[in-house]
Amino acid sequence: MLVNSVAYRDGRKIADVPREEIHAYLQRGDCIVWVAVRDPEPHELDRLEAEFDLPPLAIEDARHGHQRPKFEEYGDSLFFVLHMIEPDGDDLRVGEVEIFVARNYVLSVRSRSERNFQDVRARCEREPELLQYGTGYILYALMDAVVDRYFPILDDIETRLEYIEDQIFAGTSPRANIEALYDLKQKLTTLKHATAPLHEAVGKLHGGRVPAICSGLGDYFRDVSDHLGRINQSIDAARDMITTAISVNLSLITLQENEVTKRLAGYAALVAVPTMIAGIYGMNFDYMPELRSPWGYPLTLAAMVAIDGYLFWRFRKAKWL
Image 1 (cartoon, rainbow, N blue to C red):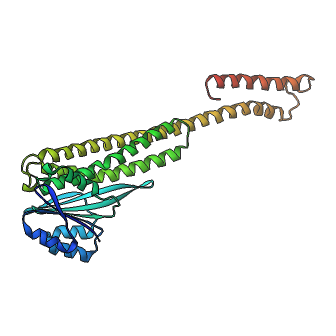
Image 2: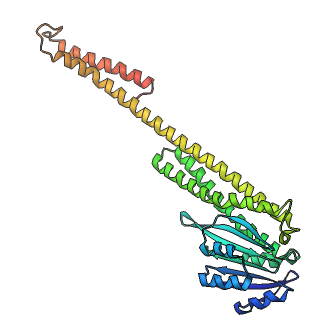
Image 3: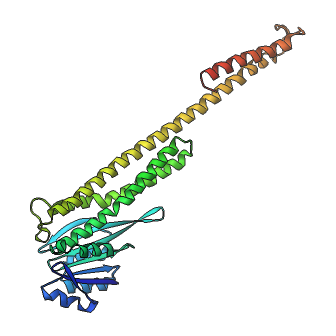
């Protein structure tokens, strides 16, 4: 288990806290402790539960993982679950961060995620006047960082969607286009599962009754909520575009099939005329027009060519060929 602990007082860092001294700083009462944990084992979560006096139901969610983004209030403490989505080659890796917040501590438990919160910690330490708000501001900074990391993923999906739309009309493989569109749709669904429930949860931190830990920070949490609303709107718009692109791609496939059908029908008609005439003259009757005439054979061939030439001209004019 990776542990990173820092203590703050009056908005300023006072110490990097060793693992064995966390409990002592929690008991001081004149500072707040920010502890970041990565991929803890079950027995290590049990130690954290006892050390921080965490709610049993919340620590059970952290132990099992794979939770839906949510917000729960346990007396004077708060519990958040957020999804951390990161690129993993052509796929998306979905991790989690469980955040426990009380008056004198913030505990973040990060699982299945590579990117840490060092940049968030540096930001908080650059803004001591805001860090004086206490653990509520640290909670805001963590949530804001997680939400802002969704934007590059969404931008990449929209860029790829625009490229695929261009490919649809460039005559590329329809099957490849549909597979790429469905892949983007799955990524948008993953992103939607992270943002939609979180948008609902953040709405409880501004306006109306808010937890005491978050008092005075309504504008900041409203900003996070606005970002989530914008992301959700963009996701819905992109999903509609993908649905339309799939419909257009299928329509183009149908048009191509119709063009092939018309082309085949035209060639079949060109072949049918000489076949019909040759079939008539192949019936071996004694009394047939021009059967014994020296000009019968060339006249018949000329008639075949003339009729096929006329049909070919009409089909080209109708754009069947």
